[in-house]
Image 1: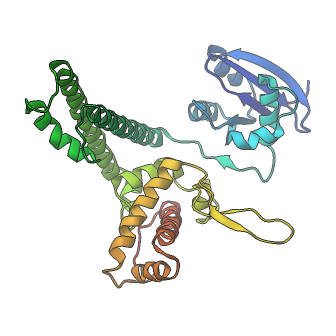
Image 2: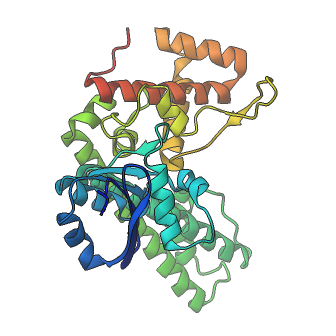
Image 3: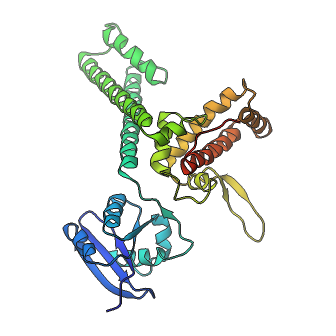
Length: 338
């Protein structure tokens, strides 16, 4: 039997499919394993290259397989799709992963540590509560409009006016809707409490992690932006240079070139949308304050703003913030304004 050197592993919740190849790329073995059988199979296997799609539970299995002595590489599903041949099935997916993982120019996703996943869990829970609060506020405002009561947009406005509407006996609201409105107000206060709790925990974790503390020395980086950046980028080893980070986050122009004619469009908006939005929001606050300052970074921002406008200056600064953030993590240093 030929020696297995490469394995393409198609992840799932309960049933996993893998395709084993030798050094020539020839398929040696195909197997279907239950969740309880997966690690037992790899324990008895010599160290080899294991490829997986960067999807749900991929980072957990990558850490477990690395402990067993295997080299694990995670690939974005969009890059695996080009290698799928034939009909869609689990074995063909695993074979496509096995072929993609040995390509010399393939781009891989760094395996997250448990600390990075903890920060990511905090951010995802906080982001979910923010979306739920926005949906609740819009729902309440829409229902009030059906009774002829219109309120301006904004969470603070709704938080301020709801008690007044509940206490006003002359606004035409019946008892049933008042009870429903009171329940909505309690939901709003509960979501506010959860968001405040998650924010406090993020600030606490950002102070405990050295990487997050160093990232916060960069203009535009606060506890939330630093935590999100560290949870996605890690220590920066997955990137060869700083300019690869904004490219992976979609902060560079999208290209549509042909026949030697280069055409650059708007930003590509690839990668992690949440981190990209945080960097843009942080850059916007810095651009607004740069008008009052005269340091080197502010002069650069003001020049870009004068030549290309406010929004392009914000995106340009967000790009620069991502590159500086990578340098801080990769070289274990702090931001130096000079």
